Image: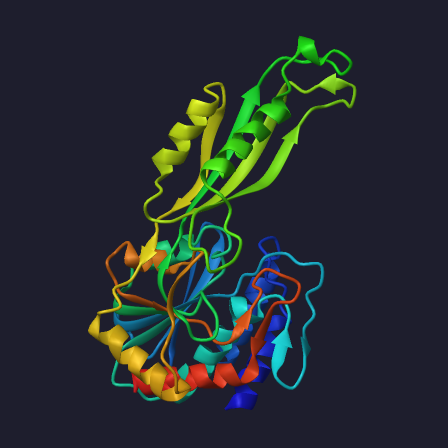
Length: 348
């Protein structure tokens, strides 16, 4: 079983499933379809030109459990993987092709009294629209989303997402005469500077507070000119007490001339850890891991929010691994086996 999971993961890692490589998604889904147990039901969907697979042990739309996963990754400078005795390193290992390999192996081999479906989507790193659309078709009592934390932490809350584009038109001047113009780039940066004074950046994953990332800033057309136009994009991950309106109103207060456009927004994810199914799941985890399960808030955002928006309880838990979206991303091999055994006991 361990060998099967590792081999599946290595096969999934061969496909460079970044947004623009549409053919890679097609090839990967074909690989999944050809290696899926013929007793399972497979349906393929396309939403906004993004593919999704639903694999289930039934032919109905009302599920007891939905595993929700994605196989898209963010761009990297190197898409090859490496391994040692303990870990596999590479883009997409923990986020989240390792868990996809576990669940594919699980569905191929288990017998469960429950109606179970697996979502595999191709747009979680963009906007998660596939899950949003699939939940107009499928219903479930519980979701399992292995897309947050590390080393079997249970995620009780994930931050909301707010991506903003700020732009401004000011007054140009000769670079030698800054007093005759208003620098648009500086005007925008001053906004960011005041924002992070009000919302100081977290210094580690132990600080569960709002973060504001200046993702891009573009402006100016000539080196010897004071720029009169500029655009800045911010990625804000906010805790529940900080609302979209708070950021918008504060930006307007800083500089009323700035135009504000919302690129993408997502709700805060919350789950009820007193839910009886989640408590049962935690007890199984404790038995397999021989330790108490750490319950935390997570700084990232995932497709689990689409379930919590519908008041569907969702379990977010990753195997052992870390550094998603980084060059040293990895997943621990033995932890994939542990995740398989936890899932197996839970659904059987």
